Image 1 (spheres, rainbow, N blue to C red):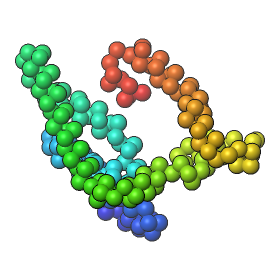
Image 2 (cartoon, helix red, strand yellow; image 1 turned 60 degrees about the vertical axis):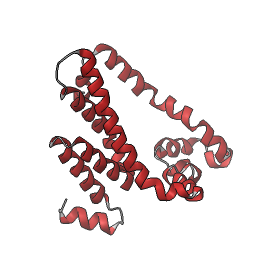
Image 3 (cartoon, rainbow, N blue to C red; image 1 turned 90 degrees about the vertical axis):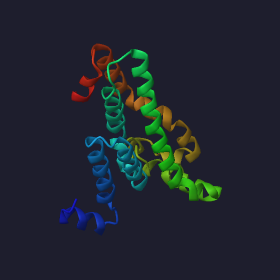
Length: 189
């Protein structure tokens, strides 16, 4: 975290990714030290500081689910299941309360909330500046999308085109899941 190259490049470009990475490392340290609630709070802070931490969301969720389940005592199945649900509810409450505290100033005024949501999901900036811009930039070489189509039409077809583009990946994952007996193997692939 204190690597000068990371700090100078990150701060020089006004990205400040090292701060969200530091919050993520705090959450990871808390998770390993069995402070799941505090780690969840730090992870929510990291995600809300910088969206790039969403890449860690699935592994964190799987880790928390597995830690919550393995910490239970092998007593009766019903008691074990209820304790697991209780622990998940506690984690959900910690995450929800942290999110509420972070979002409360913006929920108070609806106009600010909508401006923030437009900033987080920049649909109206166009297809070429979004997270899946590679497909649209490649396709634009053959078909001039901006010239031939209305932006609203392109925004409407984007989800179906994205699903079509990702279909081979989805099919291969479904085949892997159907052939694998343990979910843990998925994370080794």
